[in-house]
Length: 125
Image (cartoon, rainbow, N blue to C red; front, side, top):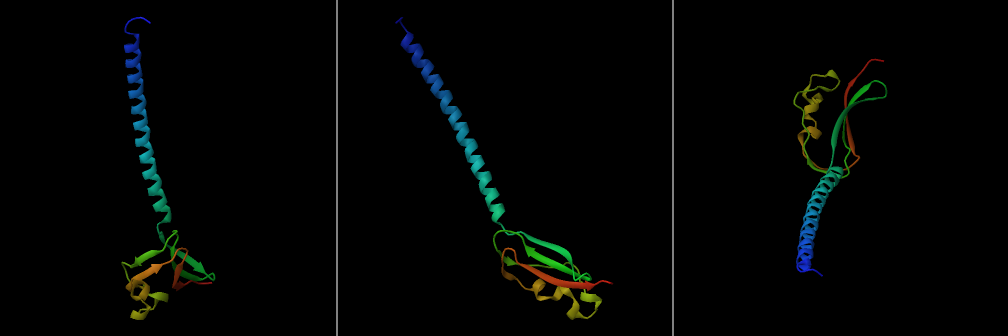
């Protein structure tokens, strides 16, 4: 072998190993980012999702439906209304939905797929 060949090959091996280590470092960084994204997606999938909707029951009854569409229970749920709404148009304080216990008290645990129905008003047939 010519003089210096071993040194050149050793230098080439060092450069190739450094490039390989750099690419492995980049892959490990990207994998860490992907794991963090997967954790966030998993937590979002398992989190409670409280949804409200207006439903029509029996063809004429308008209802407020509060449900947990998530995969885990909601803890210490506090529901509130920003305005008064009187059930069936009655003006007495007992008919004010805002004063109902569901909107005044904290719900310690609201299970997944559970829902609460609150009748609002009756329509015409």
